[in-house]
Amino acid sequence: MTPEPDVTPVGFAATDAPGAIVRRRRNPVWLALAVLLAVAGIAGPVLFIAAQVESAPGRGEAIATGRVAAVDGADAPAARFAGDGDYTVWIEMDGVLRSNSRETIVAATNCEASFANEESARFRGARQGASVSIGNRATAGTFDAPEGAVALSCRQLPFGRHGNLHLLSKERSFFVTPGRPGVSFVLWVGMFGGIFFLILALPAFGRYRAGTLRRRASTSPSRSP
Image 1: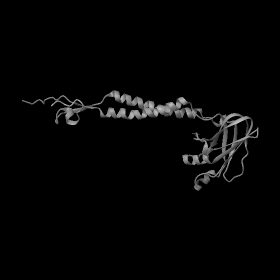
Image 2: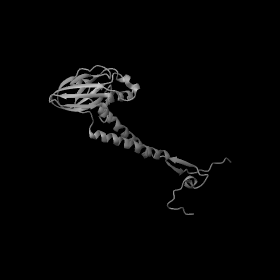
Image 3: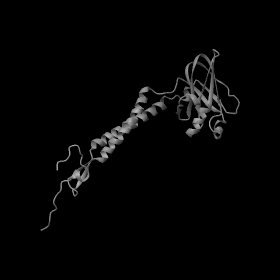
Image 4: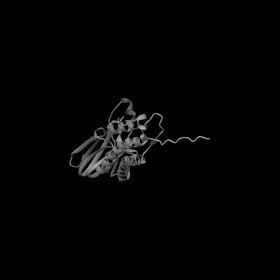
């Protein structure tokens, strides 16, 4: 019987007979492609994280330092500096390791920057879009200051569950650095491109694992006289 041209034979039909001896052949090209895609996929996020860590300013680059007042504590002295441009406020986490606890501390931080022209800017950690967390520090917000003297005061206000108030009951250090945190658009593209490559690596490796079935040439066993 002539096989249908649009039908792919499987199982016994692929090997001509139920008793056929078959072997699975795997194309190493699919394996190489899967490895290349996986390497490219991992490289994208790794480079993104490395660039973010490398570009994040440290305390050594701070132009001012201060204290975030505790939720029920006295006001902390204002941090004063000469401003002109964008600035970022970083909070020191003082050994707080749990991400949920860090997020609560950041969200509870409220700051006010007073300028020489008698204007002011208020911002809070809960409304900064996304906090950047690097090592033992996290951003509480950014602000734009006109040229002249700046007085920056920060305080923690109640936020979240009542059981988390103990996280806000102590003063925490903060420092101010010029500019805004972030990485270049190219690195963002690289990170999402890496995720896409990782997704493609899975079907490529699956194709290698599946391979193709080929009938093994049979040989008649020799008989002793």
